[in-house]
Image 1 (cartoon, rainbow, N blue to C red):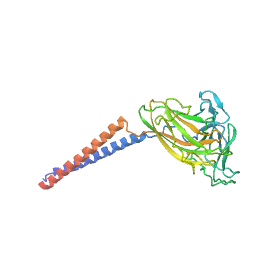
Image 2: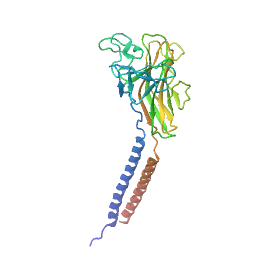
Image 3: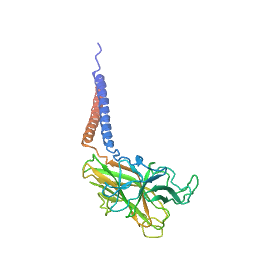
Image 4: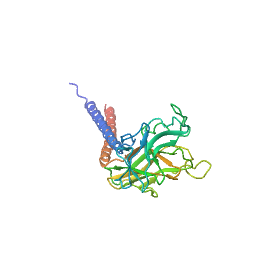
Length: 324
């Protein structure tokens, strides 16, 4: 009878165990990574402003507003955004519009944008470079927002500014959240004079309905505008348009429910500044939850065991070859 090669049998079994351990380690680490990435899901609703009710024209139209008490109706002749509330800032007569994805150039006037109807009648922005016609082209205002959705245009002057906000629930107190959005700036057409524009963004226990000095934590401002050409003054030249730019802010939740507010700012009243907003996204900072941390640790332990087992198997194989 030929004796069995016990070393070969043991090696085959060891290699099978090695494969099983390797698969377990990879699976565990993959699950941990999936759990971590899941935290980065967007928690804002209707950040592209495409879910609406009420009356809007083909190009867009006025947004309904509430008085600053957020209860009493103010302007009701337009439409509304699902999941968002638009209110007057203080005693202002809030003026804001929803612009639809599509052609933004005037078909009748060079250098102007499309016209929409709102609180005080027709409204439009300067669109530098626009060549009017059946198919206008060449304007500074892109036909779509950076994300391809609709966008908001709000008067930034104190007498007409608005606060646009949404309540976020299910947050983790002490956790960090990133708020990203696109913003741009322009000026209402038929007016002239240099202007300033910007958004004040807050992440607090209640909606912000008054412009204040940003504290850099719960209240932050969009970056200061570049200086107007030939001057040392930040702002937008008369009749100009400031291109879309991405801004990302980080806030820390102080409670499980917080209110994200965008408050329009600008000067002066008599030369209407326009603040543009689109593509709002809110993500939790992607740090592992305790369960993910445990899963990751388990996967790492399996990986260390895998390395040790491979070395042991190699040492045994070497010894077997010497004995043979």
